[in-house]
Image 1 (cartoon, rainbow, N blue to C red):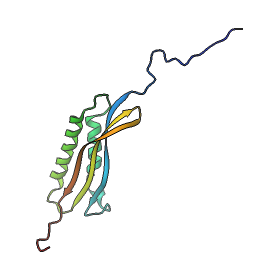
Image 2 (cartoon, rainbow, N blue to C red):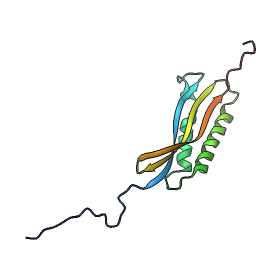
Image 3 (cartoon, rainbow, N blue to C red):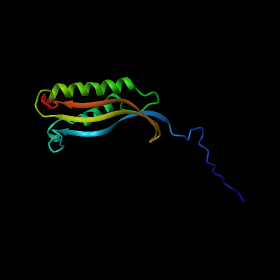
Image 4 (cartoon, rainbow, N blue to C red):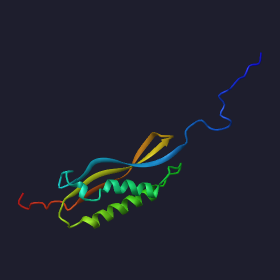
Length: 130
């Protein structure tokens, strides 16, 4: 009798998922126009723009990450958003946090806050009588 044994060896490959750094936005307050989401689709959404900027600046997660590239990309969107809509009338708001995720495969093992972006374009003027 001949026995065939198939072992569970990995032929030298590491079975552990690869560790990598990725970035995402944690939305604390959604994008609003004058306190409502009803007409937000009439404007570029800064959250969507930042997500796209993160993927353009950092398309593939790697072990080292690239905080500077991701922060610079989000800062550029933040500045551009203000330059597009400042002094246009409507009050545009949202609050997002840029998060650095330490990944093991597709699983987030740990994360840390990198930066918070508070969008508050054209805030209502404070009433001096109050």
